Image (cartoon, rainbow, N blue to C red; front, side, top):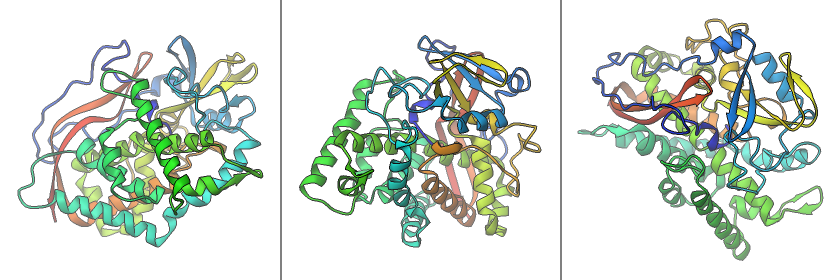
Length: 419
């Protein structure tokens, strides 16, 4: 799951009408029509000419919508590059707020391989039992609080998902849990404020923080990721401070709002589909299938861009050199030519070639961490929760040209009931 700015085009600003209207609803299970439903916003265009043209800050983007075409373009890194000007492959473009290259996200082969080989062992640590025990403690601690007697409604976005995501990140970075309080104070986005989709001053908060952490690791090396990166080499060379910052910016931004969306959306879905929660309770061995299916259905990251290195085509449409395309994961994950009943959540679905974590050499580096956290989240909800009540909520609606897509929530008030 990459780049927290890809979920920034909402209907509350960016020149579109405000359709993200707060809604109040009763909090009996099943009384909210569709709060756990996520529409297939791109169906008409995918089934038509297979692309959607959008404008991003006067830099046009051609969105690729079908699964086959998305995978083909993602695989073709020589024609559709990630290593363009820093910030340009992100939609909306971040070129105005950063010139630091996110690594390995914005690096193409051959350099990409060296960085990926360095980082993958660290990012595979969530497979270890000790790591998963830390995540389990974080999740159960949150549920203990939520299931306590007399619990009030809590905002699933800021009071639950943001907190769980931030605390879980301490395990990935191998730093003190105390650091999570700082990250929580930044809110759900590191490059975005409530009134600005690309907030340079807020981005500087992250940059200053990273400078401090790198300096601390230089003075007192430890077992944290900053110290590991300072000691590492790629292709026989030590990493520069800017390269380390590029890795860490991706780590903080890439798995932030996407994981928050996944955790929050799971609560919304199970609030209306408690029979699926019961299914996992009865058959916990289905949890891996369930997590993959929920990621497919929610697609917490709508799309990611590429820049054409030469004239080419996507799905029969011409793409000029130095123009942008985007790989629309959300549309590809609902492709009716690949998925049976694509708009239905089927926790027993077996053939599930979704691209919720990207595809090709730039598939999400943090996918192992995200999957581990989501498996524990779903299992613990199934084990301990009988009912999820929903109060007030405000949907997060993205606007891409004429297409509106629900990606999650700005606010989702929930109350959990214990088994």
